[in-house]
Length: 321
Image (cartoon, rainbow, N blue to C red; front, top):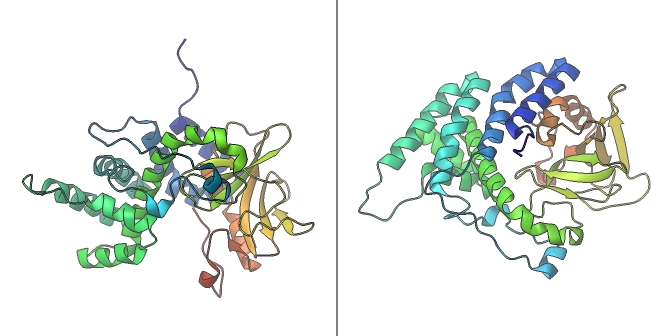
């Protein structure tokens, strides 16, 4: 009997519809990222393009894993496989129109970047060793924390540094999610060993916590690869402190199932959603309907989890998408 379960792209779109109904005040933000969110989901459902290298499957080292060593840290993803040129060219071709549709202010720069990437790939000399594609270079800059390099390249190319940086991050996200889908099954046997606040697949901090199941099990959702893992409900994912009254819950009356969990020890917070009665929602897009909590916490001097203390601004930073 064929699988009748809805597609990820469809459930993503339906989740965004529900978010818009719950939070019409966030309509501009949801509209800006709707096409991109659906496009990333569509990309996740597609088979890899012909010729793409298979994702590597590293062996889990139980002792290192238990100590907090992620399986494939984001800054160590092997270029030739995880950052496969064919896959990334395919990803850019699919994502660029969605980015342009949602963010018209940078649409021209995004389209030109996609054109330059395609032209650069087509200009490779078949008689010479292949050079890394522009798409791979952008993803690599994002994954290794070298966004200034991407922005400097953008200036030389006459493009918006912000637009190029955003595209680079979306390509990095697509590559990391591809890796996650391939390697997550191999982590199942080791899930109980992982008690850390960062992602066991790529080592990135979480962007969201969710409660699922009758007992309200807490799951953290990776900000990069979308992997979800169990975590102690009362502990801060970022500093690990677990003591009474350390975590404060902040929410808007009438929306108690959406909240921010603020840590008094490290002054960071994580957005959280109780999905025990919202099983159909796709967790990765829920922050688009919770920007009011981002603003509330940042006005009170808390920082989004995963942000370095050295980057703490003198005024609130913009809500995350």
